[in-house]
Length: 440
Image 1 (cartoon, rainbow, N blue to C red):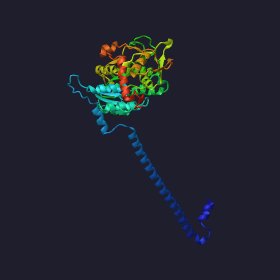
Image 2: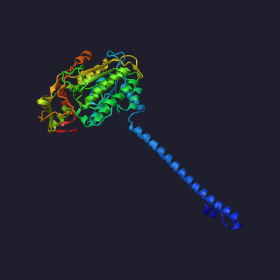
Image 3: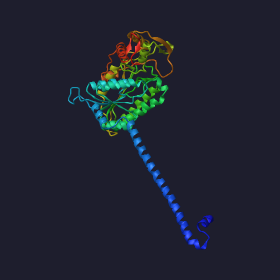
Image 4: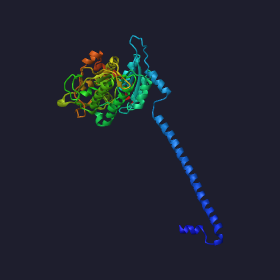
């Protein structure tokens, strides 16, 4: 500080007052000039920060808006129009249902949605259009639904905000929950997707249903896979299902326990349907009959699995139209949920049914039928079934569904595959003369 003091106060006695004043003035000027510059820079930085935050907020809000493919008055009008029944309340068939169909762009979802719409029920679809198999097939199904007045919302069942919005806009009478991560073998590659869709997604949907007012009745797709290592045939709803052979089966079994919990605590009316190997037009490309068809037409070999001791695998193949009738009968006979706003008022129905064909057919027989309708001989590669979660045999006992739903399958595998092949050749534009596809 001594050096600074000497610089500020000169030693000449006669000039002390003037020099001190001038020096102080210059010092203060420099200080204020420096402070002013800093102040201007500070103002500039504050302005830039505010501008950045404002623009970032707008961009972030816009990105969230565009990322969410739902919302708005027009969207709500589409939802209401699609979900509104077209049967008058006093019609002979009774008042129409208002049904939320999850997985609506899927195989079973599309057929059920069309059947509901055809008889005058209100239908709103929900699907996330994931890439487990070719999304273009799902989009083609959505276009088919759209041509019949069924609107499909693109979204995920794990999106609680979306589900809450849907139930806020439409007082659904029923939910047909068909959205799921399917496939037994894929679970070994991507197990997390099964937990995400089949367990977390199911809980998310049930939460929305139990909070809804009125609460809808829930009909959902379980699976014949829950029978797992059960060796008693035909499979009955009374048989044990605590020994799953795959993660997929385990998630479906978990779903049955979870739905029972929501039925018990919240009064949700729940019907679980154990589907047995569904096939038909607009089916899933990952299913054996579907992939066999394409490979046979392309001249590629197909892999046919065989069980232990060279025993052929057999499946209770069930045609899609029969499954649809079982689904609609389940909706029609579902009792009311008894809760309001998440509070149970009394006991509600809880049911589980097998939906199958009751006529198991071996895989080699399936291949021979396809060969006949495709007019092409298959190149078969027969191998022993690996330990990937598949079971050697399925056979449904449908006596309970017959008794309570009036369920009666009518389509043989011969007839069903004939209809599938006709659709497949038309949809993919196969030319028998050139052995080529118009749509690959």
